[in-house]
Amino acid sequence: MFIQRHLEQTIRNATAAFPVVLVTGPRQVGKTTLLRTIALAERTYVTLDNPAIRELAVNDPALFLQRYQPPLIIDEIQYAPQLLPYIKMHVDEQRRKGDFWLIGSQMFHLMKNVGESLAGRVAIIPMQGLSHAELQGLSADVYRTDEQALLAKVHEAKKMTVREVFARILKGSMPALYETEQDVELYYASYVNSYLQRDIRELTQVGDELAFLRFMTACAARTGQLLNYAELAKDVGVSAPTAKQWLSIMVSSGIVVLIEPYFNNALKRIVKSPRLYFMDTGLCAWLSRWTNADALEVSAMSGAFFETYVVSEIYKSYLNAGKRPPLFYYRDTDGKEIDLIIEQNDVLHPIEMKKTGAPKANAIRHFSALEKTGKTLGAGHVICVADDLLPIDRQNWIVPVWLI
Image (cartoon, rainbow, N blue to C red):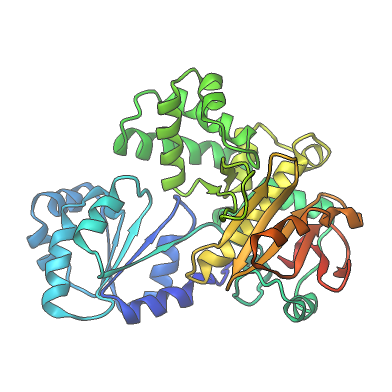
């Protein structure tokens, strides 16, 4: 089943503006498929997974670029950072846009080399798994908070039941799971094994793969929660600095994201720890040992998984548009909390996420805490499993999760 990816136009725009385009992200999210689909037969494709080609790229980069000439797609570029200075020399000499499309699955070592070698010459485009909008065939756009955009989307989107939402959460967003029917548990077991063996062992200094797997599992149990390195380290039996290093690997890999607290000088008593979210709820569920969507829906973790799903979808909508997600959260020492804040043009849009079909009006009671920031308080949303889009008041809306 072919699914149109919203990132396609962003890649085309970057190709017209930069000599090098680097698409990054976790394994198996569709990076190679997307670029080869866009390129058709107009570009040579070469992967550094091939040992002979990788050896050439590492040991004789100049000869590699004689053999494989632009326009070119180079897959798994992280295995041969030695190529980057030679790519720089080529683009500086030829001065052509879009000569190189690079694909990198893991970025914890590659980014330093890219920054040093290709600064000002490369567009770096993060990619994640399939979004809800892509799966439904909806138009590409960032998550919109304005009333007219929501009303227009009501006529496009397909309604989903709570059961369907949690089935989607359990399945996750990996394209392979939507192309053919397959065992979800087996897929994620193989995925994690590949991630640990190919990336963690080959590209990092992590010596204990089993300890790192326990660390990933501990992170999955805390999705949607405040990040506490000491607790994570204690659970896994490693030091706090090791926990911090390992989490940075997961962030660089695109496995998790950290949402920072919203801060300005007017806010004096806010909690300053970031919140941790998995970008693929299917992977998070597998690590947490959930195998049944109905059981997950009624579990104590259902709210955290619902929130993780919503945050990841909103986050992906910005990535797919080629924009940095302007996402924050709010929590102060008095216990006032707002799950998510979208900041756009000095306007703050507060968002609550509730796994309920009928959220109460007091769900927006903490939105007013943002008034003391001095910024304009825009439309607020309560994203939930309601059947329809409904106003709470003149500024705030109940938004069904199938509209994100």
